[in-house]
Every structure is written in structure tokens, then in C-alpha cells.
Image 1 (cartoon, rainbow, N blue to C red):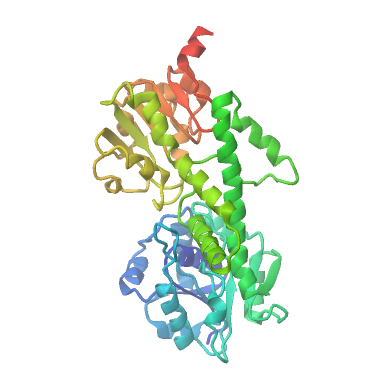
Image 2 (image 1 turned 60 degrees about the horizontal axis):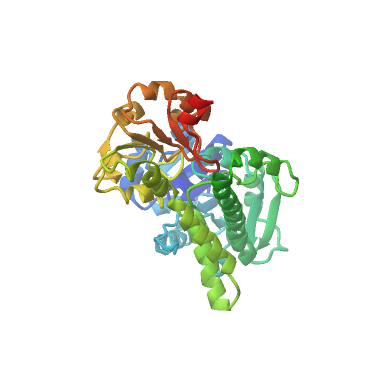
Length: 431
């Protein structure tokens, strides 16, 4: 065992980001995955995921990042993180088989004195059930966000670490490694508390999203503007400046859905109440229909032959993931329509019936309506005035307000966003 080598088993998004952050902090890193083809791709510089700064960090620290598909190499690590993303089905249920296999490999091939830390998301009870006599297996909560993962890995708010006995000290190498990421608080707790803490965090996020969605929808009908209300809430100390108060098109991405499914499953098994979770899910499903219902009311009811341009397929900006994507949920209603799509990272083949374009301008050319369903930063620099010269129609459905409402109206567009009544160009010209 070489002191100072940190192992990461599982080269999906979580493992890749965590390893890159460790290398940036000065550690020698071993990246292991049993998939030899995946490792070969990484050696060629081909990342299987898209994440800002990820490619740059692997290039910058290539001399201290070792890549291997040989589990015997785990014996060189002083500490091994099992950090594979856990896939979920459409109901939010986790498939833990691949994670179990990685944990077994870490036990079987890792040095007997090297702690193993499960960083992947698991249900309560997982880590305690996989303890082995004479070995150290811990659990650590990850709170990465697609599109912001590197920054959050390098600048953690706190560490939540699960132990068999929370009164016991952390293994020295774990304490040293976590301490190298600045000076965030380290919160040791028993396994089940740590596992449920991750779920609790996501439930609080879902609650904030549901509040924003519920009241933003009301704004659309009564003349209020949610973008004016949210800053006032963030100045309330009981809510805070970082609260999730932006209205959206339902929860997506898979992680939040998994935690809600876990709470419901445990509630059913233990006969506790989870009615609030059912309400959150109902609100999410309701809001996922916003894009299509708005398109239908604003355009399709009067012009079924309209050409529809859609910018954005990913479930959120700065990620390639389309898991439960609101954009794809909307497009599922549009198989029989004339649709053009563009996304900076997602292949247009994700929507086989649509015409895919390499640029947003080419996608919008000749369109009767433009829908911006993923708020990619690049879209924000496009001027509505330039769109007016290439689009046939004058309707923009922009739920996340990527474009300037005032500029869209000045260019003659009707502009519809979440959390405010539709803005009509005719109303501006008549004023």
C-alpha cells in the first residue's frame, strides 16, 4: 500500500468528478473500473460524461491520475472510495447490483488496512448490511449537482460521514483526506443517519421546488410575477439566499425521484405517513405538462401545422443527461408535428422524429414558435431581434427566462415564461 494514493472505484459521473477533485487537491489518484473499454476510452481522453472543467482537470493532472481495469491495483491505495452512480428505473427504484460488485472488489483486492468509503447513493441499511469482520467500511454523503459538480467537490459545504459507531474517531487517512479540501465541518453519525441525511437534503429541495411551482403557477393567473417575489423570500433568514425557489417543469434527473421513492417504500414498510411525498410528486407531474399545455393553447389549437423549434433536450443545463427530461416529456406529445431540435451536448437522435440542427439559429429558422426547454448559458446571448429576422411566427415559450422579456416584446414576440402572465407584443405596441 502506497501512502497517499486515493482510489476511486466506478468511473461514471460521481467517480470521475471525485477523482478529478482529489487530483486538483494534490493527491495521487487511482481510477478503477472493471470495464476495460471504459478505461481504454479514458486513457485516450474520451470522457463518458459531460461536466464543466472535468476534461481540463484530467488533462492538467494526467501525471498523478492512474487509470486501470485491474482490481489488483486497488492494493496500492491508502483509501478507496466506491463511487459509481446508481441507476434508477422510471419509478425511482435503484439498481444496486453493479455497486455491490464494486464493493466486493474493493474488499477482495484492497489492502486490509485501507478504509473503504461508499460514496454512491444508497438506501438506509445498505452500509451496515455490507460490513466485513476486520475491515473498515464507511459511508459518505455526496451532494454534487450536474453542471456544478467540480466546484462542489472542490468546495464542500460540509462532510457527512456514516460509521458503525458515531462515537468512534474517523480513520486517520479519511480525516487527512477530507481535511485537504479546506476546512468544512465534518459531521460523523451512524450509518443509517448518514444515509437518511442525504435523502433528507433532497426532500427539502423538493419541498422548495414544490412551493415555487405552486405559487409561480398562481402568479401566471393573477398578474403577479414570481421573479419579483423570490428575491424577497431569499432575504428571509428562515429561508435563505440559496433556497431552491426557481419554478421549474417538475423534478428530473433521477436523484430526487429516487429519494422520494425510497421514502415512500420505507414509509409503507414501517406504516408511517408519506402523504407529503405524494403531494410533491403530484405537483411535479402537474408542472411537467406546462410546456405542452402552453404550446397547445398558444399555438397548436389555432395552427396545428406550426413548425416548432425546441432548444434544449438535457434535463438541465451543463449536463448530457436526459433522465426524466421535461423537454423530452413535452416532445413525447409532438410525434405528429413538424419539430426541429437543438442541444449543445445531447445528440438529436434522442428525438428520432425531429429534425436535429447543430446551431440554435438553424433550429429556429422558419419556426412558428420557439420553445427554450433547457436554460443553456449559450442561449442567453442570442438576441430576440435576430430571431425575428429568421422565424416565421412570433411566439417564444421560455419557461426559465433565458431571453430578455423586454427585448422579446420589443422584437414583436409574445413571450411566455413560468411564474408570470403571458406578455403580449400587442399590449406593448398599444401602450
